[in-house]
Image (tube, rainbow, N blue to C red; front, side):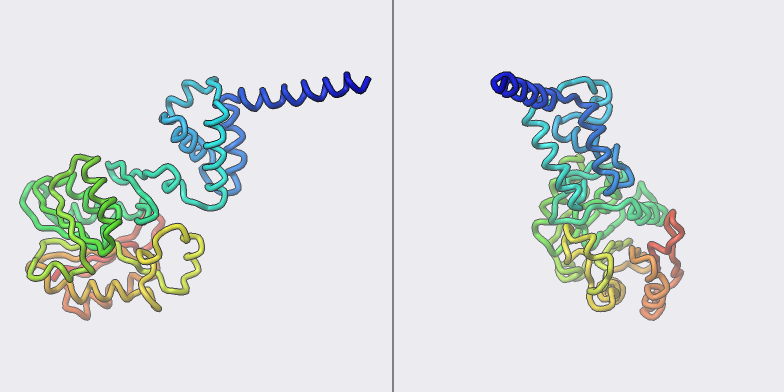
Length: 297
């Protein structure tokens, strides 16, 4: 009798393990979506993106082959990535890429993950200058190269300088230029304008660090490079330096575009006016927050 019970337990265990081993795409996605619901507003999409990364397929291919059986090795890798996502690691860092504008960008922990609201900076820049005429443009603190590359793709006649003080960030940006076939961008390692002596531009733009050292949002951003997030005690230090220094690098009538925190619009406008800029105005994002501010010198 004991022998029969042991055999039954063995076969039950084997059967359960076999079911796990034979789990299909759709079953794994259903389980992952439930696990991610407490961590993401788009749990189903994130589950598909993570599994698509593991299987090297896009979301459509997953849906078309949702009856396919997952191997134990594939499932193990997927569960490792799922665990990291539940711990708060951003999806973009897990899959190593992020869409921005019309670009597909590589990202890692050396650069900020491009945000959708930063596309507003690109939109505003494209409204300021003719697209088919030669213009000199500088993107300060380029990170992944998102802003510089988006503008360069839209306006091949422009010469864009992408500046960052972090060598590893510039390596990511240069890789993204190659992946997207963009050639009208020059990359410069510099602390803001330090390596741009005597160079002038028709347009300077930046998404600089603008969080204060004690900003309550920082714990949720712990995976991203702190130097690209934190400016100083007030959060306005980098913005102030850019406003003050850009006047030496703008052609007459050139524009400075700055992304900033949702509550910093008034302070940035004051800085621009104080330093002699005109036509100063802020632009709101889709949430109704003042997200970028523009000044003409």
